[in-house]
Length: 211
Image 1 (tube, rainbow, N blue to C red):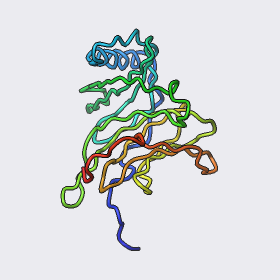
Image 2 (cartoon, rainbow, N blue to C red):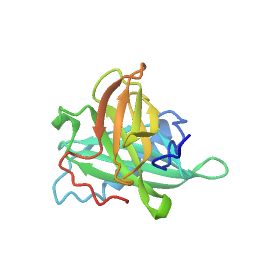
Image 3 (cartoon, helix red, strand yellow):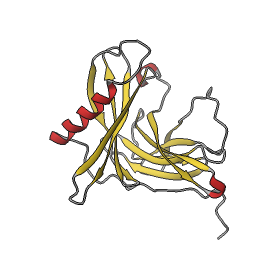
Image 4 (cartoon, rainbow, N blue to C red):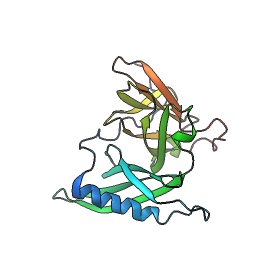
């Protein structure tokens, strides 16, 4: 076989191993996430009371478990972020860390969307000549019916995929690498593409390539 055109990490994260958070563990994660939300700077605009926190499938990468979340607010914003943690030798969660941000761009305000996506850069991968890819956590829900699997695609190369869990998915994949950019696809059980969304708006100006 010929050499690969694009040498990149693929399927580096473990597939989801656990159910969505519940019980006391969910209480712990929710408290951490909502505490992180208190530090959000929304330019003085009132976010409103937070609603129920929606959790997404966990993924493990680089020794940490990442559990994404979203949460609507009374004033029409969406809080999004994740809680990550390591595990000690006994398997107990340790070094718990939460991040949070806010957006006014919601699915309710964008009926043309086919996927509702959030993303956060969680690390870096360096390839040949030190060229770096942004390792990116992507999570979301389909806004069309019939989906089974979500994929993360860097250009025309699939670099991660996730079977939907309660109609939600989480991906970890390289982005912004040698002029290639991530998009997310949704497929049904027969392998037919139902939806595709880029992580970037059409009007976005990509940063200079090569990380």
